[in-house]
Image 1 (cartoon, rainbow, N blue to C red):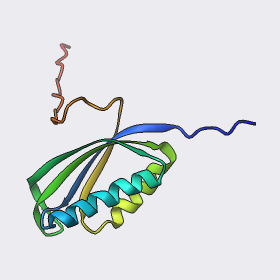
Image 2: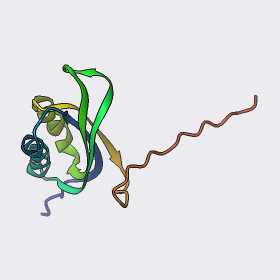
Image 3: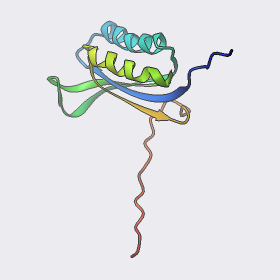
Length: 121
C-alpha cells in the first residue's frame, strides 16, 4: 500500500519584525521563522530583505518595522501550526501568508495594479 504524499502549496509570507532589534537579533528572529517552516516539512524558496520601513499605524508601540518577504512551500495541513507559532514570536509585529502560483524572478518587489472594469448598464 502506498503512503500518500502530503500536498504542498507555495506561499509568499510578509514578516514585519521590530526595528529596534540589533542585526544579530534580527538574524536570529528570521532564522526562527525559517527553521519553523522547515521543521513543519516546508522549504524556503527565496528570501528578500525589504529593510526598515515606516508603518501606516503603530503596532505594539512601534511606528516602523523591518520587513522580510519569504517565498516557501509548505504542506497544506501545516499552515495552521505555522500561524499559531508565529503569533507566539515576540519580535514579530505582523505577518501575512498568501498562496501563490510561482516565485517571482529577481529580488525586486513588484505590486500588481488592480484594474477596475466599468460596465455599462
